[in-house]
Length: 308
Image 1 (cartoon, rainbow, N blue to C red):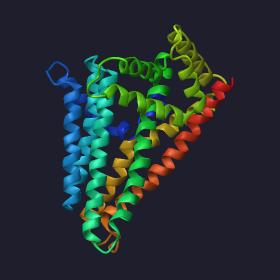
Image 2 (image 1 turned 135 degrees about the vertical axis):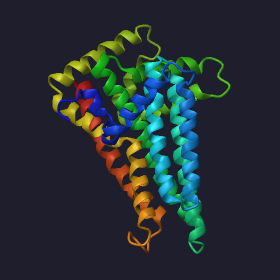
Image 3 (image 1 turned 45 degrees about the vertical axis):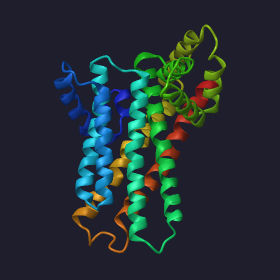
Image 4 (image 1 turned 60 degrees about the vertical axis):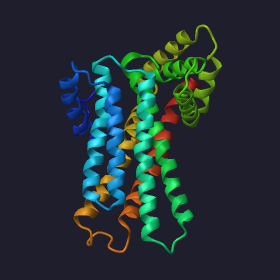
């Protein structure tokens, strides 16, 4: 672990262990084919929806397998985009939407299954509890991708790709976009930046219309890179370490592991608690802890930099 470059440590441990390795092998075979990253994104979305259908029908082991395949495919579209030099802000927005569809499909399937199995419980209460989990998990996903992109680009290139993409989305909102994807991406990026750090959001917004915004952003990223290696080393390392655990893939992993264990041992593990309630409960607890810790350490680093 210590010998790995810092940007590798931004990946969550399971992805780092084997998912990205598998994705790289597959991507190299697809590099010179007509398969595009967006095709992979659509496919892993469909796999996620299919897994949710299996959860509703209580095929928990097969659902866990499909969710693992979905997660590997989710790694694959990014790796393939970099190999083919097809990384775009639109592609990342589509990936975010695909992840959201897959996760929300799981939430809906789980809620409907529990409503059917617990007819005496208020269905609105079950829906509200599931919605609370989905809300926290969605924040985990958006915060993770923002943290990884920001810290990773500062480490590797001394640029802030988050602000660059935020600006791209802003510029695209002025053009004709019938699907509204640019406005959606701009709104998500803005809300997430503000959630992570109000100081950062104010700086980004203040120089939005400045003609030298790119120069200012590059200077700030270079300063962050320098401080991360000199005076803010501890804060930066803690932010990197915390980022790897915020990953929404980890939430999927916790839920899938619960489904797998309960599918293999249906009567031995929590025999009096609904399997979906166990899986969602474990995912919810993980998401709360990871989000809180991740935001705390990233804010510490950013606040220290902006204070300097």
